[in-house]
Length: 537
Image (cartoon, rainbow, N blue to C red; front, side):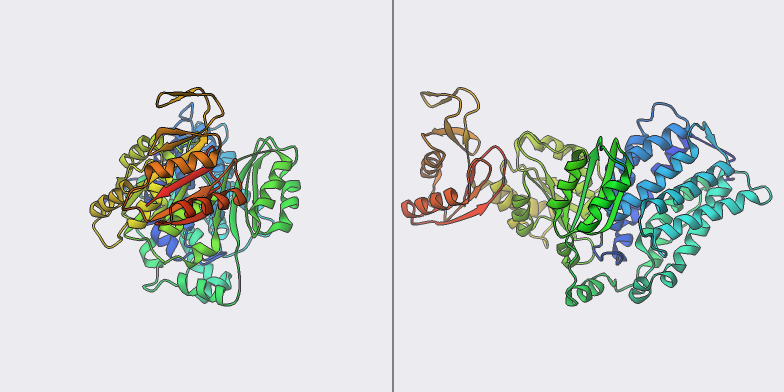
């Protein structure tokens, strides 16, 4: 094998190319990194979170205003901070932040400058944690910096390529030692997943820089992954992890230390990183709402993400052959979709359409080779189709136009079928559902030959405005009467903003008495804009 001579320096364009190769290599191996994710929580998402964070970094770096290494690294660091996912992603964002600080103002990178940047990345990541743990990605990052420094301090070591190769070699050596430093890894029989992710990123850069074909990740995954066993042992011992809660606090009127102190009593795995203009918060807590309220007291909240860690640790190990990505406007409806079989649920709906990039992240997060996407809103369909065109995975967009249709489609997905056949069955199930949306007219509208004033209760049947009434409940009842067909046997009422449980249950009782041939159930939906969503199946 012929190896390319190590480059003496790297400019901004070359650094961006190496970041791209690092992302591509980690994306290729994210399943292997996920498979050994047993610390601090056995939730199997380290590879996914690091991939999504690196993608956010590269997207920002691609828009850097100048091709200098300082500009490219700075943009990547900001993108990673805003787009960081999970504990490992936040730590990776800090490694990139320190790297950017080490190259600030530089046009090009030689070996000594690259070593300094890698060292500063490790130091910044260590400073981000109140209680840094050895045997993790932190140890691997520090070893990479030390390896690069040793190379450039030796004879003829001033080339950037030599420093990068030395950083990767030292990172791999430390990765092998992580079980010696962290008992949880030794007991599980694996190396640290975050450390593996960082080493894979460096490996991708080295392969691109030197023309090599190193591929270490598969060798670090046992034939029988310990993830399920470690998760089962934790749950049998009664340990509950709560919710992985993340959000941005913009324009905070305090330092990171003050915000960290306010959040510390609420959970563990706490990270508060960034600057007062934008702090990224990550915490594992039993009460996500309390953590978010603390953030709101210190600044403006954005990019909120809450994941049920206990549900993740009970999930089957390994990527499913066929996964489902769906969209929901509220957490209660997201739970309904997960129970129906959705693997990943993206926040979004009327007036809050997710971007193609967010849908692409969700598709990649599944780790599955084939994915069915349920947009559940006509305005989201194009973004879903765009996301499908941006990935090498086999993606089928089922054009569900409402949440009830999305639930029916998710329930109908047959994981054992060919993806195209499963998507067709999901589309057929969605088409069999009649969806009713009950709200108030936002402006003057026409229902048949009637003109209704703004604020009038109205109901849409499968997207068509067909009913107006004196009350929301009256509109719902009339819409059910019009939409009900002989083949319908189940009516589900989801109540959201503008009503409450007692009113919804009273409506359910009223409809059950009138339409005794169908079964009526009432569920919390929490959806905005529509006090009632109804599904006839």
